[in-house]
Image 1 (cartoon, rainbow, N blue to C red):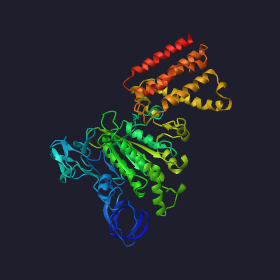
Image 2: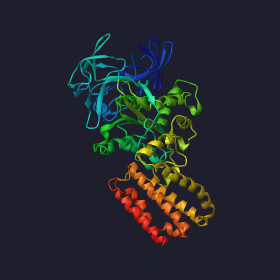
Image 3: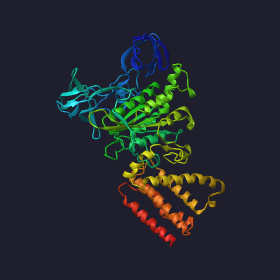
Image 4: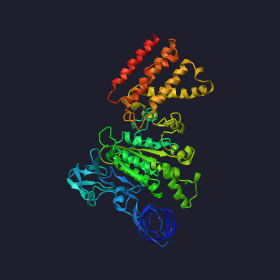
Length: 581
């Protein structure tokens, strides 16, 4: 037990803490506020308090729990809504009303609810850490596997079937040191990555249903991506779209320091949205962590680690997990505030010198891995972080540190957002370093023409950018026929293909097969237009063909009406034949 000697906002300094360890969780004052030791100097401990510290003063007592900041992992996680240190917000509201009271404690998971445990292992079977003992059907979508804890190997002596709470033993493992009772509940320190057997190179994409991403800047399953952009450019909507439609088994959404109304949108939308694969509400495979801008700033730092630890837990079951962090800039601002109060030497723009290292620690916990256990099982965590640079300045430290780490950069453009072009991902600035690695997968699973179509479309958009300089100087009329067709095709790619309405029932999600058909129509028109030019057809007559409207509206064709694309293609061939005569 120690005594407080200094209070500076969310940072307190306590004396008499010589036996404590770094990152121990402590309880502060009479209200037993939760905090974490972030610096030790002799008997003095600097403590980051995750709650409002008003009323705390010198002389108040500090109690060291001796344990690191940890999360509870067991059935009951799915559909839960937590704050940054895994306190369930619904239970906090029941205890203290709509505003979170200080010092309120609530178990992250229900320790009294009974779950129907179905054993998979059998008595006498040898098991190692990571092997599946059994499972609980958490809901219609999630089969929650109960794995043997890390550091425990032996033989199954007893295993039970029936209804149990998460703290009751479901198996007894015979080890060299004696029998060990194993409940469903696990605890994991959030600042340390969960172990695995081997990390693999990414080999397949995470399909998002967002055309600009899947076509030009795909992200690999187990990859890392950043979505930087200025205020109002649509970062949060992009994150929401990815959380809704990406082909991940589990979604962990971390609202870190963003406005409360954005988390409210998530909470209102997700239960009403239907999972396209199962027809069930999307919330049934989602965990939400809400640490909004009006919550204690110090807890933002913990919220990112809480989210990635929960994601790793489901990864260890063999699931493909996607974690959305919105936004890492707010998390970095919390780091900066605590660094300043610790009186550390500031780096660029006041951020701590270890900013890049902390960002790398977070993103490197993503990846596709062979999980622990005697069976060959892979799981993945795909991390997508929003970055909110002040004024949209990508040269600021958080953006630059992030870009040095991630492999996919979806740069949002204020000019596109002002033109109401969403998603406002700038196709001339963004990039994906996974594109070459994933090209073989697209060839085998989408179509052999896919990669060529994508490169042709990008070439046309780049040519348009060059021609725009000429058009600004001398006008569109100065362009030749080929350049007019290039400009028209680029406009079609931009407006009919890349522009996607997140709030339209059909356009919000596009499968890869539909993407290929849509892009194929645009490029076929471009090909036929150039053939017509060679036969002395005027470019204006080509651009005025009525089929252009149907190509533009093809984005609204439902997924189950693929024959409509063939009809449009046949009509396009007929109109060009009539035009050429």
